[in-house]
Image (cartoon, rainbow, N blue to C red; front, side):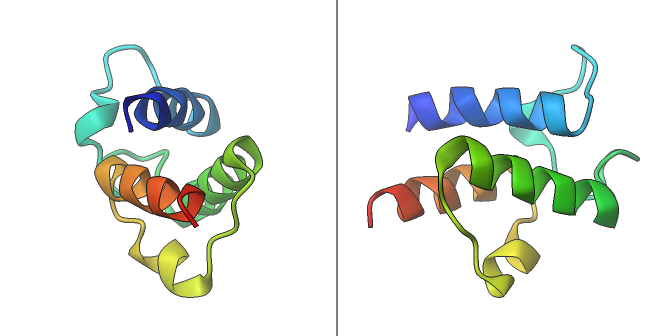
Length: 79
């Protein structure tokens, strides 16, 4: 899971164009301006590309934080 979290942190930083001072591990949807609905869809696409996974609609809607994203990716990779 640590490897997933590390890679996912990089995806969040790149997809949302985050500054170094942003605490990605505790980030939640709409905590910052960049993670709005458009940013969310870009983030989802970037995660799917990086991890070669596909989220269903409910998962896209439920991805409300970095921690939730880590759990979702970990779960999808184990299937």
